[in-house]
Structure formats: structure tokens, C-alpha cells
Image (tube, rainbow, N blue to C red; front, side, top):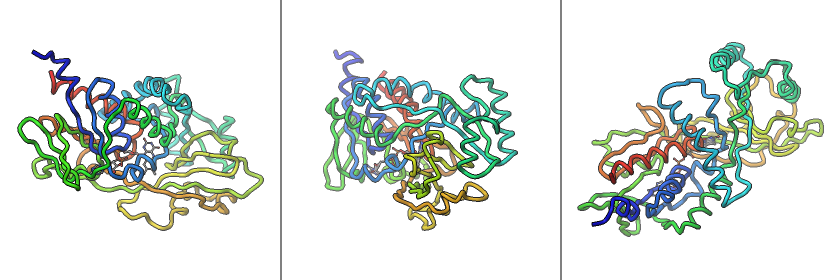
Length: 360
Ligand SMILES: Cc1cc2nc3c(=O)[nH]c(=O)nc-3n(C[C@H](O)[C@H](O)[C@H](O)COP(=O)(O)OP(=O)(O)OC[C@H]3O[C@@H](n4cnc5c(N)ncnc54)[C@H](O)[C@@H]3O)c2cc1C
């Protein structure tokens, strides 16, 4: 008779969707010895490639509940995965720290309260006289920006991360199919995923990591999951002003809800919008640069050198993300609205536990 371990290792798992969530699940499950097939027809257009890659874990202010638990677990897992993935890309890293800023006195008071209550070495208040704040106020031609710094949060470059995961998956000889799955069904003890070209892919389990489209594949009446598309735009701005050196700013920071990543002396990335639509609105520049009462001159004169968007899925009527064991051998991981990159390790750990339970 085969041991449980043998059954477990031979099990074939199909992952539908190859964004960060699909790829991370493939990594975790492949390391556990499962045979994996990932299926995705158009991965380069997904929201993972559009992400800015900020990992806002420790600076999350609600310190209890599911959302915090997922963040906390991811914060612990990220450094271990980075060390592991560095075998495939030695430059992969989390660039730290992360700075959160506001011009709103009330919001700053809340940030202060959060820091005092948490008494955490890795979180500090940035007062008006800190060198960071002085520099930021000078560059943004204002005097009322204040905030906090988190030494343990930061940014991972999403493009580099996804490319590194591809390298790993190739190294592990993970099957990759470019079909679009239009139907899944269970027949006897197997799951059958059917592509638009009528190819059937059999597996022991299916994990739906295909964001908005997950609901097309499940019986929505019995599972009752609703997802809304939330489009996020981001842009790179070229600043033609010899007086400004954007590299004097921190590597990544957030002012009044907008994430800013200086790329060079005269280029920066700003993201992102929240548009409840599948078509990007046109006034991108205005939407992304209205985070201060008055724009600095260099920003007023700035020109968009690149812009892009991604469509995320937001659960309607339940918290984000949706991670559920729908039925025997069918798991869904979707609704990663804002923090899919941050939460990918915790999500794949949850999936691995569910699968462990399934085979034990
Ligand atoms: C502008 C922007 C900035 C962001 N910044 C951050 C950030 O700083 N930090 C952070 O943590 N998160 C950020 N996010 C959010 C993050 O990008 C998402 O939460 C995350 O990418 C969701 O990943 P996913 O794998 O669930 O979905 P996706 O990356 O969208 O992947 C879903 C995949 O499923 C595939 N698919 C769909 N239907 C099928 C089918 N029928 N068969 C096969 N495959 C299918 C699609 O082709 C797609 O590749 C940002 C998002 C945007 C848009």
C-alpha cells in the first residue's frame, strides 16, 4: 500500500491564473512535492505586473483580526522566501524602509497614537525636524508634511519578483499551459479543467487564482461569491527641472494615500487610483498628483513618460481576500484587492495547510 506521503507527492494540482497568487502557490506547493500545472493565457496583462510592490505590513494600524493575521504572517515569511529566491536571482531584495506621510493633523495624531501604543522598535514618528521630513517638505515646497517610518516595511520590485518566480518554476520543470480555462467539473475523483480549445486537463485538485474570472468557473449560486473590478492606474513622470533631485527623497513613501517611488534624479512613479470600472479614466495626471493642496512647480510641469493600469478584484459583501475551500479538491484564492504582493506568502501557506488536511 502507498504511504500518505507517496499519495501526497504524486498528487497533481492545477493552478488557474498565473499572477503573483498563482505563482506563489505554485512555489509553495512545488516545494512540498506536488506535481503542478499552471494555466494562464495572458499573464503579462495581469494586475501583478501593474503593481508598485509596496509591502505595507508593520505599519498597518489595526493590530487584530484576519487582515492583521495575514499581514503578520506574510511579514514573517517574506525574508525567508527572499533568501530562498535569491538562489535564482541574487539581486532580489526588499528595499527598506517605508515612510507614510500626511498633511492632515488629525491623521498624524492617529499615527502618533498608533506608534505610542505599539512601542515597536521598528516604527517611529517622523517629526517636522527630522532630516527625512525636512527634505520632503523642501522638495514638495510645503511645510506641513509629517508621518511615520517603518524600518521593516519596504518594497519589492514586482517585475523582478515575477521573473524570479518564473525562473524557479522553469527550474522545477513546472508545466505551464497558455490555455484559457472556460469550465471546471468533477468527474469521479478527478477535476477536469477545460480550455477554450477543448483540451481537458485532469488533476486531483484545482486552485482558482484567476482574480475576477474565478466566479465564471464556480457555481455561483451555491458558492455565492461576488467580485467587483477595481482598476488601478500608475504613471511615471518626467520632471524637467534642474533644481530638483528626486534621488534626495526616500526610496519609497506614501503621501496622503499616494505611493511615490523616485526612479532617478528626474523621474518618479506615482500610484495608484481606485476606479470601480474596467476602463481607465482619462485624467490620470490630475488623479495621481492631487495629493497636496498645492502642487510643487516641478510636479506641475511634469510630463507623463509612461502610464499603465491593472484590474484588481474586490469582494462584495465580505472582506478581502477570499480564500475558501469550496468543495472537495477545489480551493479559491481571489479578491486580492490592494495587497496581493504583500499577502502572497500567507495565502500560499493557508492553501498548503488546506491541501495537507485534504490528503491526511
Ligand atoms: C497600479 C497598481 C498598484 C498596486 N500596488 C501594489 C502594491 O504596492 N503592493 C501590493 O501588495 N499590491 C499592489 N497592487 C495589488 C496587486 O497587484 C494585486 O493584489 C495582485 O496582483 C493580485 O494578484 P492575483 O494573482 O490575484 O491577480 P492577477 O495578477 O490579476 O492574476 C490573475 C491571472 O489570472 C489569469 N486568468 C484569468 N482568467 C483565467 C482563465 N479563465 N484561465 C486561466 N487564467 C486566467 C489572468 O490572465 C491573470 O494573469 C497594485 C495593483 C495595481 C493595479
